Amino acid sequence: MEEEEKNKKKKLKIILASSSPRRKSILEMLKLDFDIVVPSGVNEKVLKSPLATAINNSYAKAQWVYNNKTANNPGPPQALVAGFDTIIYMRGKYFGKPCDNAQAEQYLADLSGRTHKAVTGITIIDSKSLKTVSGYEVTEVTFNKLDKSFIKYYLEKENITDKAGAYDISGYGIIMVKKINGCFYNVAGLPVGKFLYLLGMLGYKLKDFCSF
Image (cartoon, rainbow, N blue to C red; front, side, top):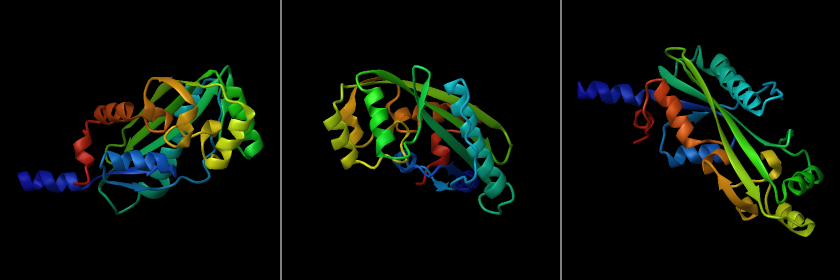
């Protein structure tokens, strides 16, 4: 019976539907057994509500990976596909991934000295039961006052083209942050507490996916 339980656990795996190195790092820190499949051709939508936007896009990413890589895959008999989408939102405006340094400078100038919201949508699809759960996490982030010379200096130090809002709180961008209200890891793209809560809704615990 014990051996059967061990074998069952070995078959459980997380499929991370994301190319984010920060999300990968957080799952590694949690010591989970996971693979990465990057969704392609997903049409990310911007809706009126930031919560609806983040959840919709996380669902689209998870569903793409499930449909294209997991549904007919003879790999792990039981895999959970986890999709995430993080957006930066302030005063009715979305701050996505900047297309160039000029836009990044403008983003950081707008966020300077103000409080914005980091919103992450999460969707997890259980490939065995086909149950799907979604949720979100919101963290308030207050920036220090940033002058133009500092913004230029920061952009020379960190690659921000793949980062919503043009900063990385888990990297050099931490020096711009005055305070946060909420989950730190949410700002990095993977709110750990909410992720574990959604796993629980599907009947799983963190240890079910441990890599050791």
